[in-house]
Image 1 (cartoon, rainbow, N blue to C red):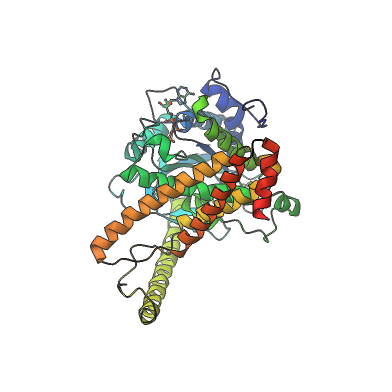
Image 2 (image 1 turned 90 degrees about the horizontal axis):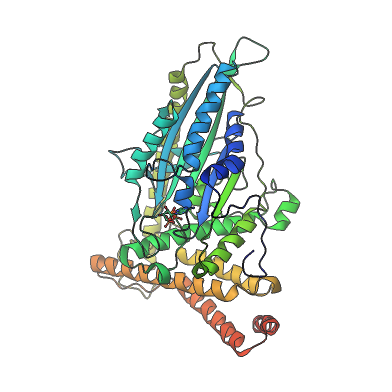
Amino acid sequence: MLGSDRVFSFDHVFGPTENQEEVYESCVQPLVESLLHGYNATVFCYGQTGSGKTYTLGGGNLDEEGGIIDSVADGLFLLLGEKKKSGGVVEATVQVSYMELYKEVLRDLLELHAIHKELHIREDERGNTVVVGAKEVVVTSAAELLSVLETGNALRHTGTTGMNEHSSRSHAILTLQLIQCYHSNNSSLQSVRSSKLCLVDLAGSERAGKTGNTGARLKESVHINTGLLALGNVIRALSDPGRNRRGNNCNSAHIPYRDAKITRLLRDSLGGTAHTLMVACVSPSHHSVAETLSVLQFASKARHIQNRPGATSTHAEVKTCPPTWDPGEARLGELEYEVHTLRELLKEKEREMERERTCRGVEEGDSIKQPSQGRTSGPDKRLNREEPSQYRLLAQEAAAMLADVLNPTSSHSFRQRLQDWQERLTAVDLSRQADEKDCSVEEGGDEPHHVTILQLREELSKCKVMMTSEKQTSDGEGHITLMKATFH
Ligand SMILES: Nc1ncnc2c1ncn2[C@@H]1O[C@H](COP(=O)(O)OP(=O)(O)OP(=O)(O)O)[C@@H](O)[C@H]1O
């Protein structure tokens, strides 16, 4: 309960006196067990900066009490050992990959020598998300797994902000791929079952006013908030009661997974086939009450998402392998698939470049009619048209807020959300202005702003009119009517 009247319900709630072991046993252990039964699973931590996401996940940090990852490592190898002893599994391989998404670029945290190489997200023939080119390390014990993680943590982007001395500046995704080879019931052949567990430490939502971020840190904040905004839009779309009534196989509702890389990466986990646990971290401080409310509302929405978990093997998808199963051969199959995907990627890139060349030709032709004569014919460095516009995401959020204003039950938090939104817009504007300054130094041009900025300004002035009307009304009930009137 927040304050005296905001009540939320969740599957588990942990107060300040509970320990990490209790969190693991009640929420995560069942997912590790289902992993051994061939189900995919995801755990992701969400919350404002400094609220304890990295602490809760833990892993590879010897100075702190072990978190979820430490217990997963112990639990997984313990269960595998028991399964092997009972004869249920002949051979099992655990592969680890660890990557971070920093400013919309996906990087491998296990490739010490190729940290600047960008990884690519693709879908396989079954619609599952795969990251092409990520290094996978085979580990044979919990200690080995944690040591791999520690190496990766050293490469992760962290920094000091006004809210957290060791703030994660990126989203980190640790994936454990489990490949089990076991006897089929009806023959001497063995079958392979493959499943994965993703442990995701999201970067925290930040308000520039509180973190005091400027310069590079502010730019990071903009990227972090943009990714989280896209995640919010996906969760809002998935938790739409209409969609759930129609059944989530229904393709009619558009889910904006492609708006950010983090939503593409979490696609299987949100509305997909994995068992998913969201850990919402909140601060006990009354200074953070607005952020806490926002996180709890986000988590409540996420709770309405319905996934369709299915074991990745046993029946239709079981592959048979010769009695002497060779992990090397299995790896060869994977590498063949990777080569195939990379070839596709290359073709796609070539098509993209061809399209770009054509567009540039058209733009050069158009520029005779355009007022912006100073435009250069080289690639447009100011606006990356492939990336989802941060302004567009903000506009989507503004639209959702406006819809909320018309909903009498959510009016209390509106003023706070609007303030948040204004802060984020200012941060994006500042970051954009800095980018434009950089570009105009390079190109000597002075391009007019993107048209969406004008639309956003329009939305903002509408909101300001509402705020003024709200202030003029002393009665809490009355302002809802007044806001409605403004919009009608
Ligand atoms: N339950 C807890 N018990 C004790 N210390 C905690 C707890 N949760 C967090 N902390 C401490 O609070 C600080 C901030 O936590 P942490 O870095 O995990 O936050 P975060 O949510 O990951 O922040 P960011 O999004 O900025 O990365 C750390 O020093 C951590 O050790």
